[in-house]
Length: 406
Ligand code: ATP
Ligand code: MG
Image 1 (spheres, rainbow, N blue to C red):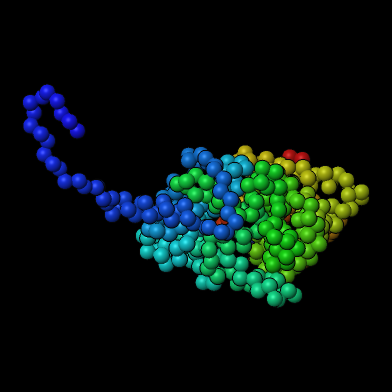
Image 2 (cartoon, protein in one colour):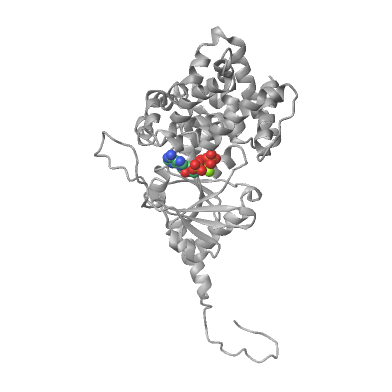
């Protein structure tokens, strides 16, 4: 550049140079590039979604970011994204990643790998918090075996999009990219979130035959989140309800508990009954409800008791499982015991096939019987000595509260 009328010496000729990015900057650029290139040709739709950072568990975010910093893909997935989009209060935060369980373990000191067949990493934080980190998997279904679709092993690692489509419902298959604040959607889940609709990923009858417990999961989400069930999905639930008899009984029982645990027992049991699922799993209860005409008061007390349980759950937090199960069967049990000279024996005879069919654990079945035995004394205002287990007396008092509220 020409310089005029100043007496300063000409500037020296400086060598031209470019500032090279540091290694760290280069890594960052590489990562940004490769994040943008991820999931090409997989049918991915990205939705910008600014989920409130404050409602995302900071420890889960830490785990995601550390995995990403080490070159792995990591996303918040499943129920937490669904709940954040629908109701704002996830129960827990799960992570899906391209890292293998042993990679995760090597990145986190406070980590243990659990499960033999289906290996998962649990990253542990203070206060007993566990963040579950699962490696992307795909549906191992061998579609040649049309006859028997039941999934028996599900530990085949895969890609992110395969991990999304192996999930049960579209609303459960959304992944969240924390840094780009995008929901990754391979299955049309965002549209179903907007429509508040439960839809299986793929053919409903295939997905329910693969895993009949999904029928109960559909009921749980419909009841808990107040969602509709897509008509073809509902029809398939009804058609395949008998398959629940083939599912692993402890899984079925766990899912029955989830139906009544989270403050939507009334709605859950209504759908369970109406869909005919109750007739498969708890025919004694279904028969009690079907026969409404012969005891309308008892049936309306049954529904009011479930309402009371839901209110108690919302107001005071989770109710003990033994209290819930006793309340659920309280009215038919009263009928079974009425007029019997040995009331406890009548209760035992009623409960034995119920417990057998849905694999009620011994602890809960025994607790139900003990509560039933205590109730008449408690109801008469007499004290019951707690003996070694005060817990069961407290449980019986809860049942009394729930069944006399109606
Ligand atoms: P909850 O809020 O009751 O925990 P959830 O959707 O988080 O509901 P989990 O059992 O914790 O349910 O499962 C986490 C995720 O794993 C689900 O969101 C879903 O994507 C997937 N999943 C769970 N169970 C099944 C199943 N039986 N078949 C296919 N995918 C499943
Ligand atoms: Mg969950």
